[in-house]
Length: 211
Image 1 (tube, helix red, strand yellow):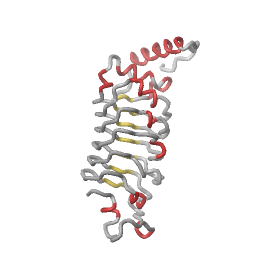
Image 2 (cartoon, helix red, strand yellow):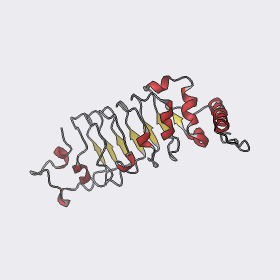
Image 3 (cartoon, helix red, strand yellow):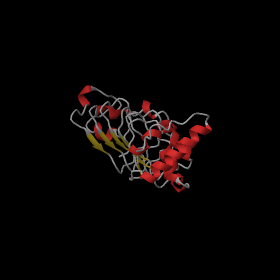
Image 4 (cartoon, one colour):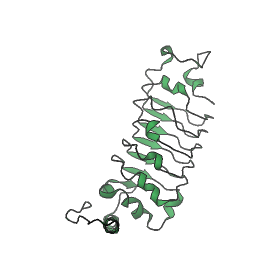
């Protein structure tokens, strides 16, 4: 398949037209893995109750057209041609699980307002700057982050430097399928204190967030 419309409008002669008679009301999971899809076309709105969408191993280069799916919570676009992810919160809505592994993503700036995100898989991309994690540090619900297979994962003290960006939530983050050890939490606490002092602020030592 080269178009989602080939499935969702399989019985429609003029596929450029969308109307209520074509809606797939009972479809909540759609798996279109291993096709030749190049984009997410407007016919995706014909499955308004969709909760899980799997588009792995296609040729999609841009994420779009999903903001009109209010129930969509799980999205997988592994092994596609995605390199740029700008303003994702305007394109995918209230996603909780997002799999973008095996793409060519270099920047995480577009992820910074995905406030409902719980699990993010970015393994095997092209992220090489540890400071990109800054854009994920304030996501209030994020618990699972996978970055293996990126050059950034070869950075010295990689886990400590990534976990530091989550501040008081460090203990809640499962990085690359491993929760932080107490030793890691202690090191993050020290790094955070040093950073605060460097920025000219007095560190609050009255309450250790990692114990």
